[in-house]
Image 1 (cartoon, one colour):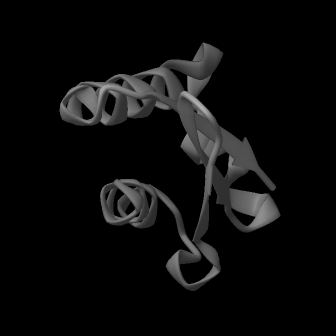
Image 2 (cartoon, rainbow, N blue to C red; image 1 turned 180 degrees about the vertical axis):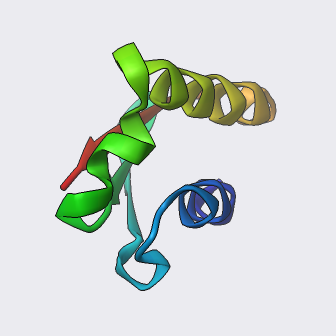
Length: 76
């Protein structure tokens, strides 16, 4: 999952070297904290959050096998 988020984010941004994903596992959820360069935050979120929503949908669909909730948190 972590690699999937990194590949998607690196394809969207101008500073791919600043893309970092941290994974935190809780009881019934896995939280992925995506941090990007401050100039690229708008590119990852998109207009009205459409790109962020699409990224979350792809990750959630890929996580169905894990039977856990997946949360993607975008940070600058």
